[in-house]
Length: 309
Image (cartoon, rainbow, N blue to C red; front, side, top):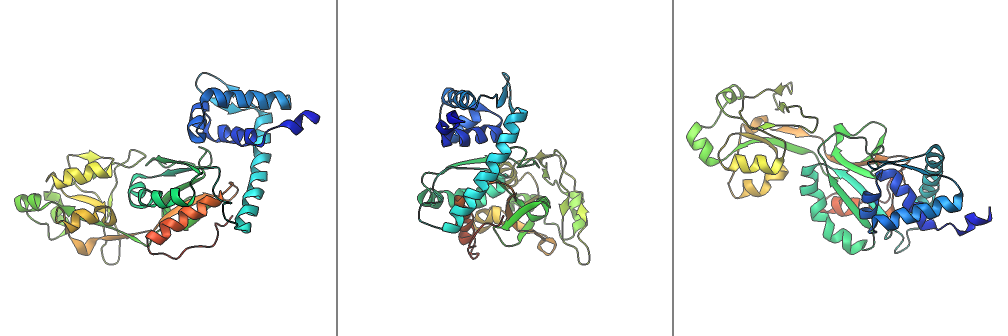
């Protein structure tokens, strides 16, 4: 059809972004445009195709059957383009477009925030959207290009790349708390202490997975305070509110300054490495490889040559 020759390639990418984000506003933020410009581009695309691609209401946007089919075909095409650019490995091939990540708070603090300055230097034109979210989600269904979680939380049908070595969880308290309430010498003594409860993203309380020779039983501990945020838990622990169960790497500074002390260290628990993961059929932007390698280098891990599809 002659009119299809005039379809703007950028409009097709914008359409895919809307299908991912399910929102004109979020798409506009991701692409650095105004919502009216996004809306105009979609109207232009529908005009030139002669088909309605999106159902719009005041609260949501979703693809029509025709739009869903077009998005699937376009995604396959962009997968092939991405693979071609990735294998070409020419300077600048990974410096355009956008990446949308869903990561949990500790990974944001430990991995992504330190990597941002170098990523911006290497990929200055990439639009990187980072959503910090502790909920267990389907990253493909919710329109993300990749996520970061512990290895055992990565769905089996995802491609996963480790970003760290094994992580260690420890029980810690402030010197003031230990001076007032004593230092526990055995796990059973935790029953006499206030333990800061960790609320998971699915609103369940986390059982401390302590290390015991021959077994690793989840441990229920008493406590009057429940928190779903690591930074707040650290603050409460430093203020002498109780014993906390935290990722050791997350409190390296506090341990170094002796603001917090590890207790019952023989029961510290080794956890899976943190992984970045993505759907095998998702279009993996070449800049994703740059981000992965920046993080791995900062974690003293060898770089990888490509993201596997």
